[in-house]
Image (cartoon, rainbow, N blue to C red; front, side, top):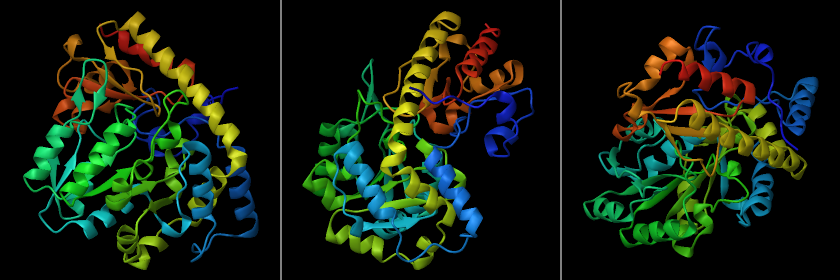
Length: 381
């Protein structure tokens, strides 16, 4: 089975960023929203909430931690403790608030570019300074540069902001590399804040290891921030969870102001509970089938229409990191593609200097839209 995307006509009725940023003649494949209908359990939960006016503040005790713990056990084999979780509005807020507690103003925080552009802003918002340690390109995959991370820690960096799985490359970090990262963090008394928003979208053949599940060292130094928002397309509803696995890290999260929790959206919380319930597992399984088909279709389309492009099929998510450097369209090829082909991709340089000549494409859409987008781009060659 698979999940069928809405038609282009239906999608243009949406009022979210993906469908309002550009004119109607542009195919939008930039921001991380998907084009699928909601999972039925989520639709039911939201419809019921509207019917009974369940639109107040989130409660001080909710079923969300237990729902996520069950989901993590089923999907990752990770037995997370609901008592060590706390909700917040979104993953970005969780990251900032944790970084504010584990760093001091001016401390350096390691990121691994090319990486999700808001990481640079979130580190600054927390009062810290970005320390760039790019992913290592092995020629066939990307991986954490553990030697580079050691050098940065040795020079005084105090935390690592990890993207697991990685955005934009779709890299699923191996358990071995995560364990080695945790050991480094313990050695240098540094914190690891792991953004695991794409973890539910790891393909079954790849799997995903949550950072806090990898070792005792990871549990000692780590914080995970998780959400249903990417897998289930719930970003506008505002709900995430900060997860810990040791007494010291749990104390840090519990020390955060109550407003960090109260800014969570009631609809986001209700939708997340429904998303993480066993009843939504079949929908997520079907979505992964669809995304598997689309990532392979994209590879075939690029090989046929843009053979100069370089693309590695991602292990997780619905985001494609495409190297268009050989086409000679400059450091930011998405500008020309938007102007002349009327296809909106995410600008590669926004992910760091390593993004020059690259673009990020969202393939969480229909095969028809994906095909038309690549065919439009190919007319520029």
